[in-house]
Length: 249
Image 1 (cartoon, rainbow, N blue to C red):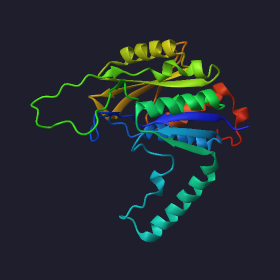
Image 2: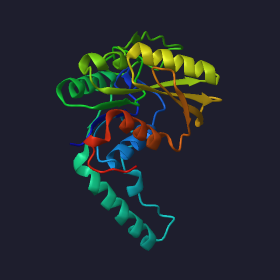
Image 3: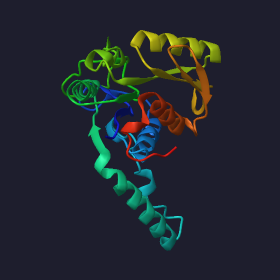
Image 4: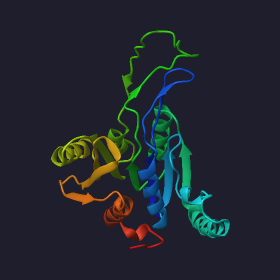
């Protein structure tokens, strides 16, 4: 039997009125690459993704007008074949708001067989009771009160006690030791089996330091380029390759 993996990716928004919302900069790149690697391993992937987040294998299906048509058609043919070879094992669930995200993740974990959950989404920490219509833009200032959303990661093991949980902890402008210590405590608090700790350097997503942190405080540095592949490899070593139909390592 193939491994069943739930991956969350991209961000959620909190609606303020009919035309405005509070969101973040997540494009879902990391979650997308992780989903692709799991699909290549033969796993069934359930992909919950936010608005405008990247989806598995879609980037390769975009035509580059700067290249020759012959070159692009050949490349797209290969990309199309790869996408379709995994399509039967890819299940996608688009969401927009935190409420939609919460409901979908809970439903998948509580009512479907999931072996692994990878919580890579940048979920909104705060919500707002959106007002109907459009807030006036004539005011000199605007004060909004947001309320804290429940932490999904803290509820996963209640919904599915046996699932292998991979959590993420993102900080900005902190040193390595503070990042590792924070990620370690975050993992223990939320019963994660593995925590991916990453920090932005100078507040930039282009420059990140990334570590795998276990409940035993084993720390493994990993590059952004190798993150998806190394994560899938680590999960397979712990969950078991016997469930996979296509060995890749």
